[in-house]
Length: 263
Figure 1 (cartoon, one colour):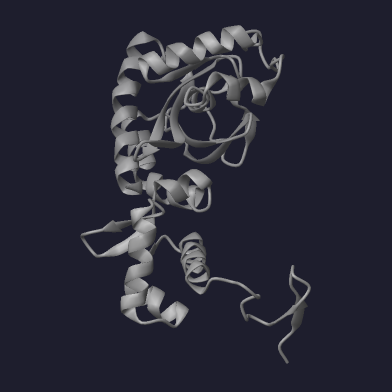
Figure 2: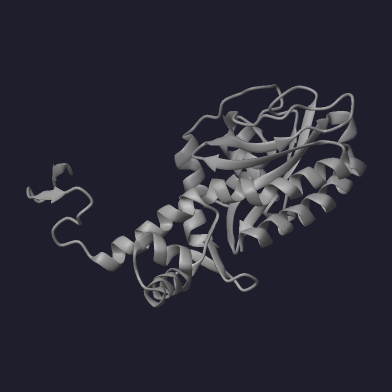
C-alpha cells in the first residue's frame, strides 16, 4: 500500500504524487538534477525513460537547464553533464570534480613524482577530496578525507582568494588558528596574502600546515567559476624556487585539463 503523507498546506499526498500547486515541469527538471548527482552523464533517452516523458520533452527540459548553465551538452556523444551553475551550488560538483581530476592527477603525480591533492572549500575549511602519493622515498602523504583550516593550506588559500574580502572576514572573524610558527594568524596579513595570490595566479604553503612541508596550488575552474584546487606538496627543500617553477607549469596545465573535462 502506498503511504499517505501530510504536505505543507495541510493536505495529503499519496506516495510519489505531486503536492498541491506543484509545477510538473519544475519537478521534472529537479529530477534530472538528481540523476546527475547519481551518475556523471545523462542522455536525452535516459531522461525520457527515467521520467516517463517523450524524447522531445526530455530534450526541451535539458535545453532549458543548459541555457541557464545547470547542464552542459557534449557535442561528441550528445550527453549532458553538470554545468558551472550546478557545480557552484555543490550539487554534483564533488562527484564530477573527483571523476574529472582522477586521470590528470595521476599523470601529474607520475610526472613530478610528488604527491598531488585535490581540494574543495567548505566554509573556513578545506577538504581534501582526492589525491595520489608521490613515488619519491622522502615524500608527503595523501590527505584524502581530511579537513583543515583553509588559511593554512595552499589549495585553501587559492580558493579563499576567489572570495570578496568581506566574505573572508565573515568566515574567520578577527582571529586565525595557529598550527605552526609559519601560520598566518593576522587577518590583515591574510588579506595581503590573498591579494598576492590573485595577482600571481597561484598559492604557496611554506610550512604553514606542517613543519618541513611546502605546497603550491592553483584553482580548477568550470567555466569562470572556481570549483576546487589542485596542489603539489613536497618536503620544503625540494620545493625551492626551481622546484616551484617546474611544479607550477605542470599544475596550470593539469588544472586547465580538469576544467575542460568539467566544461
